[in-house]
Length: 196
Image (cartoon, rainbow, N blue to C red):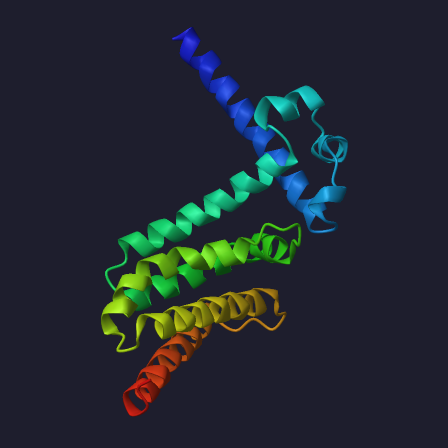
C-alpha cells in the first residue's frame, strides 16, 4: 500500500514537472524562434532545475515533438473514427479551435518543422483513396491536383488559425470543403471536355 502511494506521488510530481516545463517552453516559443531558446531559460521560467528538465525531456526539440505529436494523434484519431469524411474535417477544425493558442504558436514557428503541413497530411492520406476512386483524371494530372488541394488546405488552415477575427470553425471547415470539392470537380470537368 505504501509503495502505491509513493509511486502515485512520484507520478504526479513528474506530470507536474512536464506540465510546467512544457508551459514555459510554449511561452518562450510564442516570443522567439526555437533556436534562440535555451534550457536555462525554460528552467528559470518553469522554476525547475536542469536535472528535472533532462529527467523529463531529451532536449528542447523533444518538447516540441511531443507537443506536436499529441495534436497529430488527436487529429488522426478523429479522422479514423469518422464515418464520413466531411465530418472528420469538422472534427479537425474543432480540435484546432480547442487548441488555437497552441496552434498559433506552432503554425507561426519557422524553424523548419512545418506543423500545419504535417497535420493536414493526416486527413490527406485517408482521403487519397476516396478521391482516387472518384477521379476521372489521368494519374499525372490527378497527382498535381492533389498537391494543389493539399497545399491550398495548408495555406487556408494557417490563415484561419492566425487571423484575429475568428471565423467559426464549422464555417471555415465548410468553406474549405467547398473549395476542395470545386477544385476536384472543375478539373474533372475540364478533363472530360478536353482529354489530352
